[in-house]
Length: 244
Image 1: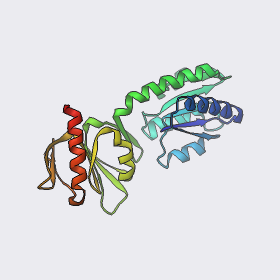
Image 2: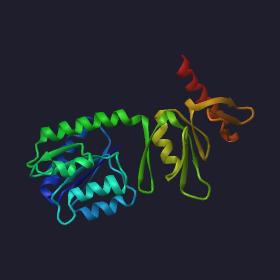
Image 3: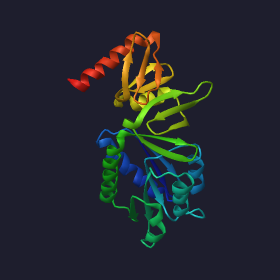
Image 4: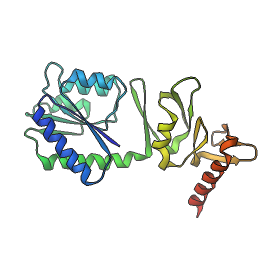
């Protein structure tokens, strides 16, 4: 799913841009969501609820809270280096103001359809390269961890939080294991109990009789007795894919 935000106080610009994006993304059968905002305060309020966008089209001249202010909030306050920001303006005088915010591109009004498509195409190519990363937020900080460095996800008891254990660190963030299972299903994770998802590539010893497995960091994880047949099937299927 590609999440896109448009922030502009000109309804005509929003409609034109949204229609171009929908036409292009549907053409390639891509899953996407486009949200439109008309002022910076409304957009920031939405971001405070831990909403993350892959692509943000951000008008510079939007009243008291400018696009530059919003960009600073995204990059500095939320510490979000992940979202691709494309600034929109009737002028090209803002280049130096935007330098520190590392925008992906800059579009001059009136908007050109071919230019918009060119920008989006480049971004989608970049996002495709990033699909081997898991992205999550801890409060206002956004983290991107390569799947190969993830050992396992575990639901935190009596909470709506998830513990992610990596080769280098451990983090706690708000999410459900069911949602994570859907996100990582193409990256060879095995659900070994109702509360744990394990990265197959980081398993060193599989012990179905003892109902446990050992990971590369020597963590020993319990296997659900009720799930053991499913776990064995998935494990050996992935083993066959690796070596045959």
